[in-house]
Length: 334
Image (tube, rainbow, N blue to C red; front, top):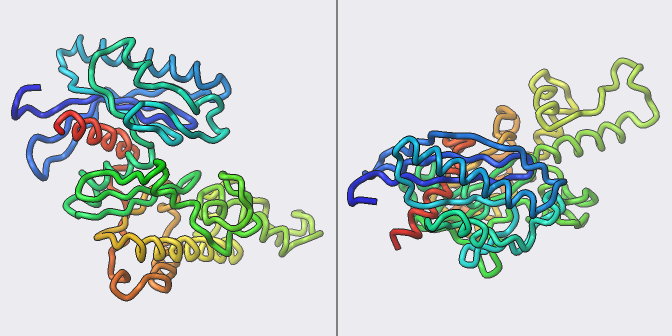
């Protein structure tokens, strides 16, 4: 990479459903915008196991590197946003849930070293999302950024002065596992039923909260009664019903968002960020959700934290790829 030229990195975003990849050109001047090209993806096919997934990712990397060579693009390094808890120093996945069987223990750096001598850096997928937003999105220019991702699950990231804070065990930012009274009795992805916010405030959590309250409200009455709603199929389904004015959906959406806002207020009290960036599919749930989220935050946050802006992320699905590129860029320049 010659001095002054924009750096181009090969990035990966490894999730439970798909693995995305693309070439990320980072800007060579302050205020510039990253460009993602050559985007492609393969299905994760988690049931095939961690070894199979590792090998298919490496095969995808070979195809992408060949493509870059054919196009005359010089790749400066490889950035990886990985599901689970990766060790960025050793390249080992130190923890993973049953969503990706056999993923824990995978040695990703060793696998990539078989096909390329480029530098490789791996961080968590939610951390990459937060780093992307902090570096080039809604958190750009802020010293301390708290990023919260609200989708199928809930995750978070803390970025200070451009660096991702991962904590002593690599689990810093697990925002979905903050206690919430609303979550008591709901099974969290971590295995507890003692009351985490994720199982009632994620997309799947909205669905589960709606369906439990539906059962309680209409116990013993068939859907054929006419005024009994069908079970919700997803969090998006709940949001649509709320948008149409259904009372049950409106109450569930508001209660869920308020609980999440209260948790984010507590996180804000602990971290004292300059800005809190909220991303993910659930942020599209509409004004009921946003109003309740901000109300819960205001009720929970300390007076000096309360003015902290809660803003929607700007980078969308490119955020993890951009964040992974930012991580390898910081690594090769350090």
